[in-house]
Length: 214
Image (cartoon, rainbow, N blue to C red; front, side, top):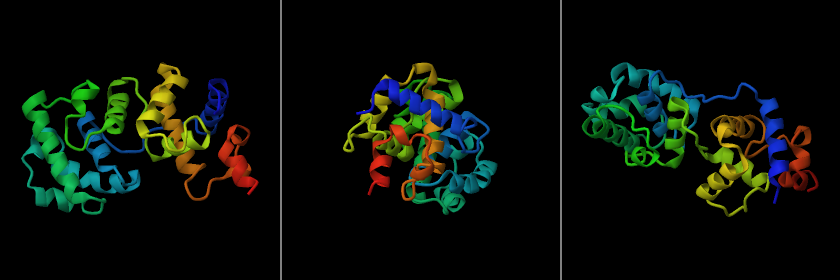
């Protein structure tokens, strides 16, 4: 397993590779980020960003989306995977926000996860981006990088990855580190064709060394 010192050295290199790393979902309000993040499950940010302008033009807030017809919402997001389930979830989420939370996003992670379609990753993303509440959202990229750098076992769950990263990374860096790890995984250490030969993190990476050595 990679030590904390070595992992933080690798993380600093990743930060230097992608200093402008940021969330790529497009939104104007905390509510819109919540909806976009729910829609992004098993979908790309680019795909979500193509669908949400039309959705948010019709339904910009919890009050309007709570009263929406599910068929119309489905039509707005039909280019996104699992759109039928997601349409029901975002309408129900909006109804719960109006009825239970005065149309405001709860700032408590557990409360936020009571909303349909909201898991730990979504809660961490939304609270970190909108309110600066520390958390590490573990998506497919963050999970892959953590396992390739050998800070967790290959069979580790998403929760185990999150807990290990929280132990290794100082709390004040949690939100920004999430973005840096995502950019590294999305644009460099990709799932199918990682750029191991030209990777400045190679000396820290068990996967990369094994990949190059066949």
